[in-house]
Length: 220
Image 1 (tube, rainbow, N blue to C red):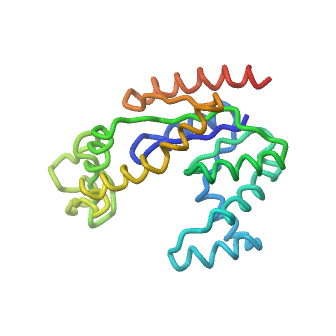
Image 2 (image 1 turned 30 degrees about the vertical axis):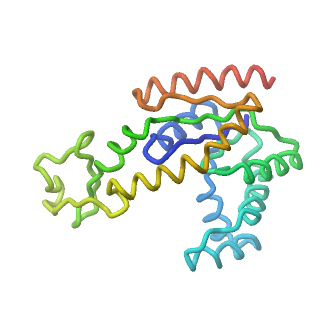
C-alpha cells in the first residue's frame, strides 16, 4: 500500500503514523527524513539540497520530488510506504502523481487527521519547556507537579516564541489555506478520508485502520 498522511500541527499525526506503519507493515517516510538521509549519504541530489538547507532556504519542489522518486525506488519501499509531510500543495500532488506513474505505483489512501482550530490552539499554546534540561510539559495534558517548575531539574518553564497564540494562529491559517485545495484534489479522486483527531488516540487509530483495511481490499 501507498498511504499519504495529512494533518495540521498539533493533530497527533506523528503518533498515528507510528501505529499505522507498525500495524500495516509500512515504511514510514517523511520528507524531512528523506532530505536528511540524502544529505548524509552525500548523493548528488542530497548535495544540492544541502546547499539550500544550510542557508535556511526552502528546498525547491522539483528537488524534493527528485529525492522522493529516488527514495521510493529503493528496495525497502517495495512492501508499502506511509508518506508523511508531502505533498502540501496541489502542484506537489500532481508532481508526485507523475513520479508514481513512472514507478508503476499508485496512492491507495489519503488520511487527514482533522482537529478544530480551537482544540489545536489549546494543544499547541499549552506547551512549556524547561530552560535547564529542555524537558517538555503541557499545562493541561502533562503539567509539572509545581506550576512553572521542572519536575526533573527544578528549572524554570517557559513558553517558546513559536507557541504563542498569535504565532500558532498564523501557522494554522497558513496550513489551512495551503491544504484546502489539496483536500479537494484528493476528494475528487475518491481516496480521501478525514478522521476526527479530537478523540482518543485509540479511537482515531481504529477508524484509520478500518478505512485502510477497506482500501487494501479494494486495491487488491
